Amino acid sequence: MDAYPPRVRDLLVRGVRMPHPASVWVDDSVVPARIAADVTLHPGCRISGAQTAIGAGSVLGAEAPMTVEDCQLGAGVELKGGYAAGAVFLDGANAGSGAHIRAGTVLEEEASVAHTVGLKQTLLMPFVTTGSLVNFCDCLMAGGTSRKNHSEVGSSYIHFNFTPHQDKATASLIGDVPRGVMLNQAPIFLGGQGGLVGPARIGFGCVIPAGVVWRRDAPGDHLMLYPPAETTHAPRPYRMNAYRDAARLLHANLHYLGNIRALREWYIHVRAPAMSGVHSRMCWEGAVRQLDAVLTERRKRLGEWVGKLSVSAKLLSAEGPEALVREGQVQARIVQAWPRMEEALDRGPGEAGRAARHDFLAAWSARTATSYVAAVSGLTEGQRKQGTTWLQAVVDATVAAGSAAEGN
Image (tube, rainbow, N blue to C red):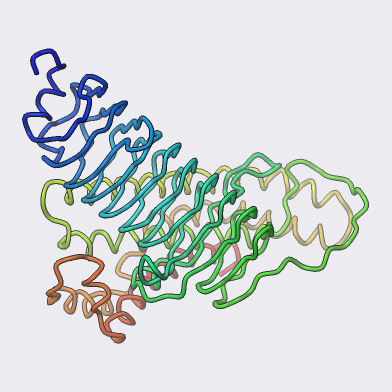
């Protein structure tokens, strides 16, 4: 054992399983006490970061070398191979080999991705599953009630998060937080070989068939989303940085910010008392840290987009057609109102939904189930309604910041 580097020796002494210790690299920054005794590190694993924590029964690198940097893993997590940095994997989360998982990402309980999946600033709520060869960055997905009844992203799916105007104010909501956290909503299905053009909002129980690239909002529930009938368009002039439908884009961004804030509130008030112990607590801290990073990124991208509207409004006003002139006027109002919107966003939701929060937390404090999923699943319909009312008030308070652009 003396032949191994110090941190590898420390983990072996703790009881960490390494079939071939000489092929495992553990940086000196890793705190051994944060790696559970029965973790398995297969050959080729590289572990680094003072914030790294790996919970009981987790297995890394079973199919290919796995690199983990400053990630927090709960119990029974399987990362089969690839790269993960600044991400959180709650109990039972799973990633196939070739995964590339970057900061701002949280996979909640039993969420999973198959092989060769790219995630960044991606929030997958419990049970959500993706197929393979998926690029699913800058989005939140919820829906489903169990591993057998879960929201699904088909293989070779893309969330398109970069525009021809070179902006990324494009985060999408597939489901939502106020209802999604209750683990009682119908699953969403995004068919394989398809895509979603952000920013978009998709309701629970919706289906986008395989091969479809969806470009609209569909916040209603239980919809089959077919694209409109194909029509032939002759080439038309295209003007870089001349936006369309700015009001919808603004509200899509505000809804996303509101939902991330609601999820953060959920972690602060609901998950915190349910996540004790070294590894669980570090997962909680890591998730809150990632949610803060997402909020910061979304505010930054929204501000950059608003900054571009000044140019867009002038371009549209010069185009001539009345509809474009009206769109330019809408954009000019958004630009003018942005300082007030920023102030409203900085103030946050305040005490939005306070009464419903109080009632819900009183019921939550009386829970008897030992696991988070079981505790949520055991809530009564009335208790779920109280929780949803509270969280929806947080979302609504954030969306209300956009009223400054509407002259309200």
